[in-house]
Image (tube, rainbow over all chains, first blue to last red; front, side, top):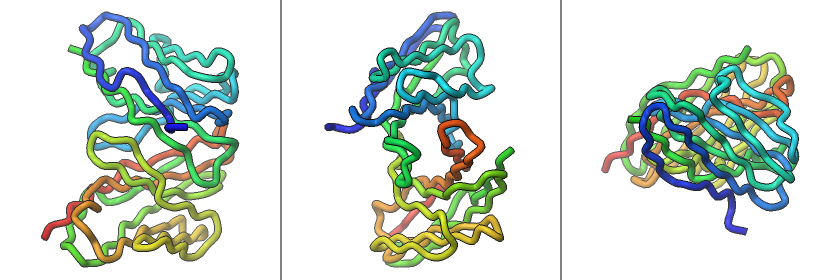
Length: 114
Length: 112
């Protein structure tokens, strides 16, 4: 297993366009998290899946954001009608249960909205 | 709600020891984590404390005092490659999925 994979690594899009990111967690991990990180800040929690069920969404996740995890494997995060304020690193992490050793993070997708 | 505070920046020289402090407020504390993040890369796990005391792992140690809402990460024998952001994160049992809540990070610069 090569860890948590995210695709693409970088995405530049024009304001108003829709974008979709993919995360492939470690295969046996049942929990998957999306975080957003802007320059000089720590990661901010966006949403959490346990298997295929989305169990929590942060108030940061506006109605332009949607996330899915069909079949409890990979996950997608879609942003509709992107705004410049959406420019950030989007990080995916996974864990097996509560994970006393924290999560394993992917390398992230850096989104730039121009 | 939760609140996590850590210094924004620190500097140190190779071979020295540095201590990065973190204070937190959370209603359902269930563990404190330290992560290292190099610029443009993913955070990587360094340490985990859930009981009071010191956890040592090679050059890195982490301390927790739950009554004071305080932790520190101690880095010994600093190397240039230790230049990175160090993130303090708290797990809150009141947060679904026990999602980690991160501080803003401390940028450590190690010079020769």
